[in-house]
Image 1 (cartoon, rainbow, N blue to C red):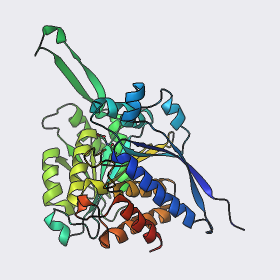
Image 2: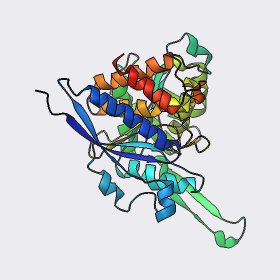
Image 3: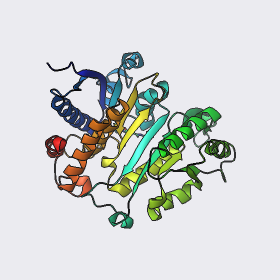
Image 4: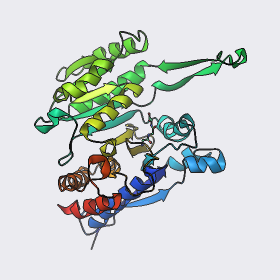
Length: 364
Ligand code: GGG
């Protein structure tokens, strides 16, 4: 007699552009993985519900998601997200109306973005040839430069007279929790090191608080090496001395920029996975590729699904299925090393070709 599968309820939000293609791709791979567990001792399954929110929804309704969208999402085990943004809707409306609304309302304060170098993918980084490179950017995902505090005024002064204020918010609670998260993560890695990214020479309030909290938290982790590096120097270090990195913790904006740099150094933004975690599990966490909606290639079957499938692996880890996550990661490596690569990484495979290869490789 076979056991009843453990079923995970997942809200899929493909949203815009290539988000639709990569979420469909990720779902196909995850369903194949679940199918292959059917006769095992621990079968699992996914119950999907798809939401058509995004920029087309906005054009029809004036909203990026249903008014009670957060209520609808609250009881899912996880959210599987594609990408947000389309040229017909201002980017700040689409980002704040969907992705940031979910991240901030569900207190998904830890955004984990591994920088992973894959076999068969040519990196622009000289050292990628012979040096072991593997680091994780931990992005503070609830405050900092994305606090949404500020405003525009004085437009009445006439053309050229308006002013805008955009404030960053740094709280001790926000800094401390993301730093402890980074240190705990470092303790699980071969290299126990946390690099804090700062800009306290110029930003003498928020970033000095950030540095103070980093020193205080570091004292509780004497077994973990630390460094504090200015964001400008850290961007140079990503290129020139990446072998010295393990866990990089940074504020919302700094980590967003640095993780894009890291993905590009690994070969393409299309490869990069991410998890927006509510570590206390009071709300569902959200898993999404780092890349955006790529309107230039959307709908043409050219999108790289690896970032979305890598994000699915992070979701499986979050569900406590590390062996299944490892199967997905292995299938990704088998696929890239066999040269089944989309255009962004120098190949000519379609999204569908990559999905087929990933599914075939699940039992590799
Ligand atoms: N899948 C990631 C995504 O859709 N990103 C859109 C974007 O513009 N993000 C900017 C940000 O999150 O800072």
